Each structure stands twice: as structure tokens, then as C-alpha cells.
Amino acid sequence: MNDARPPKLLLLDSASLYFRAFYGVPDQRKDPAEPPTNAVRGFLDMVASLVTSFQPTQLVACWDNDWRPKFRVDAIPTYKTHRLADGSLEEEQVPDDLSPQVPVIRDALAALGIARVGADGYEADDVIGTLVHQHRGGMPVDVVTGDRDLFQLVDDAHGIRVVYTARGGVRDPDLVDQAFLAAKYAVPTGSAYADMSVLRGDTSDGLPGVAGIGEKTAAKLIERYGDLPTLLTAIAEGDPALKGAQRTRLEAALSYLEVAPAVVRVAHDAPVAEHDGALPTAVADVDLLGRLADDYGLTNSFKRVLAALDII
Image (cartoon, rainbow, N blue to C red; front, side, top):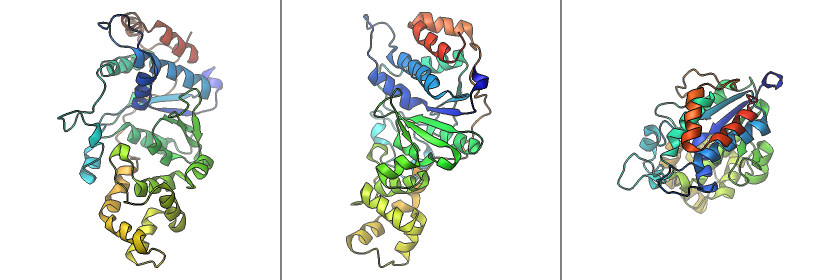
């Protein structure tokens, strides 16, 4: 069955999915002393649904080896500071019942034989950006995420789109291509979306943006100048089209605009290790899968994934 499918790579923004699963799947424990499993069950069910719906030939669960990389914090110290655990300078604030489920998800992927890929010093977004760059032109790529930051990777010419789960989940996602970006954000390409994002900022990531310039104004500026570097040149050269409060705001934000693109844009060259992204044709570790199924009550979730992978 897998061999008959046209080549397609499905990249999972793993943390985005397991956070969504944690908040969206009910905790069915009758005894609070039992280990929580709602995020694990939800994540595995999402994998089954995505494989069934999108029929990939390759599947990679992309991982945050570093959720707040030093190079981004050095550029913009406020980057993700609101997500820090109380009193910590490095640790991300994660719900108590989610933390113990993340290693179980990791083990479940290993047992199934689904590639899990991270890169030290980089976020999952950077792993995704690197794998997209490596496969661009070789096969279509669908990126599954609830994070708008990855809209910057959309590229119709190379078959790269985002399966955006923030509203409809994995069963009814938005399929983000360039037409979607044009209709929703008035930007023509993924690259233009990234430039617009720099100007607009993103409070969820601690990126201040340019004061007084929201999404619509940012999109109009990118439409007028084509890209952020050309806009910066126009500011420096005193383009008369930039005047009044808008010019004042842009000039006041120049130090931010110089460093923000390197923070907003995902890496294309993260040190991603060699891996086999092909869909598994057999369970990789039967003993581990059995222990996880027994210890955490995951039998039905594993069955759904195995059925989607055509292993049963």
C-alpha cells in the first residue's frame, strides 16, 4: 500500500500537537495516582488521523531539543520569556500532568519506528525548516502545526504547504497555501509572511514588533516595498512615501528590525542527524510497544496508528 502512494513528506510540529492533545483530550483517570495519558492518546490518535488523511510516504516527528535557543535570546532577550517556569532562566513552564507524558510520547514513536528528529540548540521549527529546505523540489511537503510562524515555509511552486490545526484540529485543518496567505493576510508568499511578521511582532513569542504597526499596515508596507530589506533601505534613504508617525515609528524600531529577521525566520541549516523517514512497515520494538500499551492503556491508540500505517 505504501509503495503505491506518490512521494510525500509529512512533518509534525510535535510539541504543538501534544500540547493541543493535552488540552483537548479529557483526562479519563478514575484514580489520580495513575499516570496521565490524555496527551499521549491524543497525540497517537492525531498521527493515525494525519497518516490516513494525507497519505504520506515519509513521516518525521520534529522535536524541540531547545525550545528557546541562545541565538534567538541573544538577539531579542524577551523571546519567549513569558513561557519560562517561575524562577527559571531556561526551563519552559509545562503543566504538571503533561511533563511525564512527553517521554512516553517519545518512547511510543520509537516503538512504532516513526522517526523523531531534533537538533541541539534549535527548535522543532528549525528542524522543520531544514527538512523542508532539504526536500524542496524533491517531493511535496505538508507541515502539521498550530503555529502561524511556519506559514513562512509555504511555497506553491515546490508543493510546500502548512496543515494548520489551531482552529479545526487535525480532522478539519486549514490547508495553508499562497492563496490562503493572500486572502487572509494580504501577503503573496511565505517569505513575505515572515517579513510581515517581523513588523507586526508576536506577543506569544515575546517579539515586540514595530509600535503602532499592526498586521494590515505591515502587509501594506511589504506589498509596497517587496520585502523587508528594501523597506529598510527606503527608511535609510529617506523615501518621501514614508512620513509622519509611520516614519518615526519605523526609525525608532531600527535596532529591533536589524536583529528580528534572524529570530523570526526558521533555520534552513540546523544540524539534523541522518534518519530514515520512511513510514514503518513493521513495529520497530514489539516489547516496548507492549509495555507501553499495558502500562498506560494505549492498546486502542496503538491499534489506530498501526492500522493507518497498514501494519495490521
